[in-house]
Image (tube, rainbow, N blue to C red; front, side, top):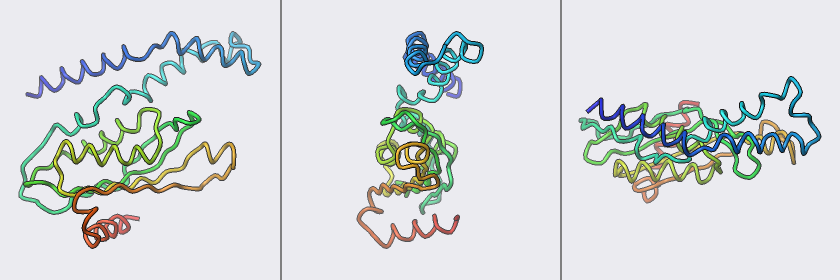
Length: 206
């Protein structure tokens, strides 16, 4: 079973590599450098197009992945209460300006029939959802929906807190300002007292 998982992962990574046209990215970066008045053949920039292409291949690797695949490892345990993982760091790229936004995600879910996934899988889920052109609101919803669809979780609560460089280094230029988004599903949507208890647990970690 483990061998199959590794092979499937290798196929997935190969598919990602084929899905990113690094040659076109290099051409585009060179054109941008020329358009802003730079000389792309000077010493400091001659390798920049290739570096940017490799970087995009990495930071946009989630674009062609199904986040639910990260939750394929499931276990039956006696624990039937909330599972909460706090302070999962992430980096993503705002789709409006292609500038980074970064912060932390908190994930809580109530298992269905005592079925849970590995704790590291929740961190992988965040990575996959973050590694593509994204907006924070959609990212928060995609994490929550993946947990419901893959685990049939009875309740899900996701909180994402991030700083957006499109607000910090350009435009309004307010460094340090942060945006918080919340997505609730199932019991945490329909039972406010349960939702408040999970939010209290998240605050305890602050």
